[in-house]
Image (cartoon, rainbow, N blue to C red; front, top):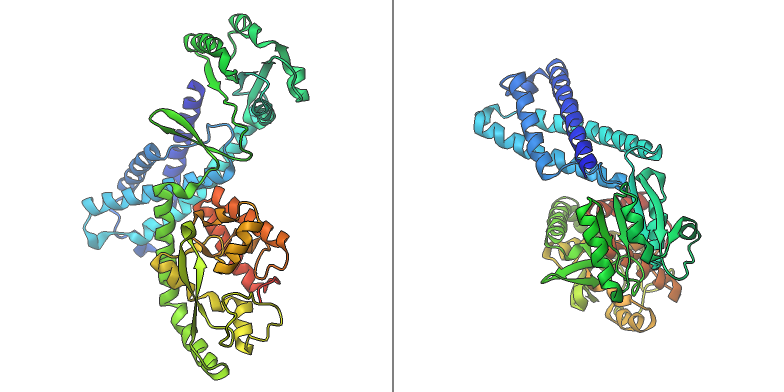
Amino acid sequence: MKTEKNIQLGILIVDICVLTLHTIGFYYLMQHLLPGSVNGIASLPWLVVTYVFSFFISFSFYPSILQYRDIKWEEVVKRALTTCFVMLLFISLITLFTRPYSHFPRGFFCYSMLSFATVLILERLGMRYALTHLRANKHNIKNVVLVGNEPAIGLLQEHMSNPAYGYNILGTFYNGNMNNEAMQKLRIGRVEELYPWLVEHPEVNEIYAYFPKEQQERINIISKYCDNHLVRFYYIPAIDVFKGRMAITFMNDIPIIARREEPLRTPVNKCIKRIFDICFSTVVLLTVFPIVWLIVSIVIKIQSPGPVFFLQERTGLDGKVFKCIKFRSMKVNNEADTLQATENDPRKFPFGNLMRKLNIDELPQFVNVFIGDMSVVGPRPHMLKHTEEYSTLINRFMLRHFVKPGITGLAQVSGFRGETRYIDQMEGRVKKDIEYIENWSFWLDIKIIIKTVTNMLGREKGNAY
């Protein structure tokens, strides 16, 4: 733990040095290129102190995570961006309280923070590479012992065997048989031999163990030894009831294992997604939508007399029914709520066919997003008839309704878009939808939106008819 704190302190010192040099350099650069942008700044020392102080505050809320051993590069980037965003807020607050509003250099602040965010990300990724390189070369190592023959212990051994994480597995202790060949090679002895072995090996830093319920007394003995000898003890429960990722929560100090992780159940993530949905849909409805609506309305009235919009009942969040809004792309017919569109569907009129290929018919669904029935990104909603049919044919189909349906989704950008002629196509779509639910992040939504746009511009071929 002390080593991790030292690494974190070292990262902070490097961050401050990089920030100071960047602030001074950026100030002189802007003074040379855009002299007017620095007019509201009291002085260079004031600027440096404000930036460094704001970074300290931001770092206290969102410290570095580089010191942890199995952090992905995406997490490093997100943490750096969050730190810079919070830092910008504090810089703005300090400036507003210390300088007249007429001297608020908002342009300089925004440009400098964009530049520093880029530099900070590159610095952090570079340090992450350096740390993994050091650990791969036997520096900053943690000596660990694995105990038990549960499959989870074997998986843990495989994970810790990555040299970049800096774990040195001293040995394994288990009774009975173990199918994992690596665990067999590392075996020191039976579980009963662990305690005397620990007494003779003070170099152990961490123990990861599974003990059957009837060995509660042995758990207490090992745990007590660890507490008295600065060894961290981690108990691995037998949680192979479910396959895949699970979530452990607590209710009145009682551990409860959830079937899967659902990031969108947390209030913060819900709030982030809803704010994004409102902002994104508002921009679309105020800019693109009015122009498209005017053009589409005229052409629809010419080619196919009837309403411009088509409202269809579809299954939404928690299985509730809502009215999905679309531009009408078919002639008025009695099969709209039961029959899926096909490639040469005679119900489509020429411009309707074009709208469906370019996804223009989906544009009014941003109204559904704005009022809260849908999200920009999520599993595509189905007609009620299809929900009823597929829920009996496909395992876990109804899990799609644990989140709001979306205009686009992970399944759609992964090739499962439009008509589903065969059951395996729908199974593939459901699998991707569940993957989205279990792995949601704001950045995943952004990636899906970008992929959707690039697919549209590239005229991706699919089954959307």
